Length: 116
Length: 111
Image (cartoon, each protein chain N blue to C red):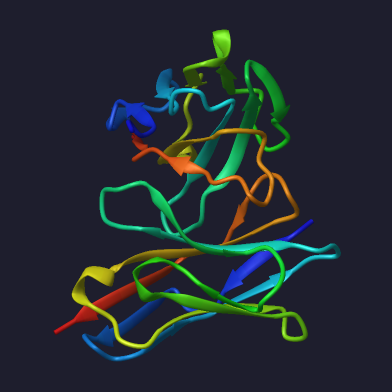
């Protein structure tokens, strides 16, 4: 079974530039998550999709971050413009159904973003 | 809201020694508790989870954790560690939907 695919693996940009990350979840998984993991901290949920609808985006900095999941399959997370504090690993995860206690999350390897 | 505190940022240990990684949580509602592991250059993997029932939970790779409601703790233990256990370990809490992670504990196993 193929896992959660993310690209690119690494990205280096200058502040005020734009950047986009791509995620392809496990086939058939209805729920997709984007997490931000800053060095030395645990992952923080940015946005959660159920199919192509947003379930929770309360911690997404909407003035600069946006995400979409067209057709309820793969997803793109964009930052425009980037700030130094956006340097982090961006993790994508998916689960078969809307997350409940019994739902297992499968994580991708992440995209490491460095903003200079 | 729920939160998790991992009390140790780094835990060095010798191979074949026992280890305990500490985790405390706070919540005003019933919670579910998880331990995830992140090996170098890999994604997060679920080690074990507590949903209900027996307070001692066994997971993969010989790890286990004990839920203690009175002390609001969910410490992770392994009786004998291997070099391959070197990784970042995250405790997480959920009330049924999104996971809230702790800051992580870096376990370093040396010969």
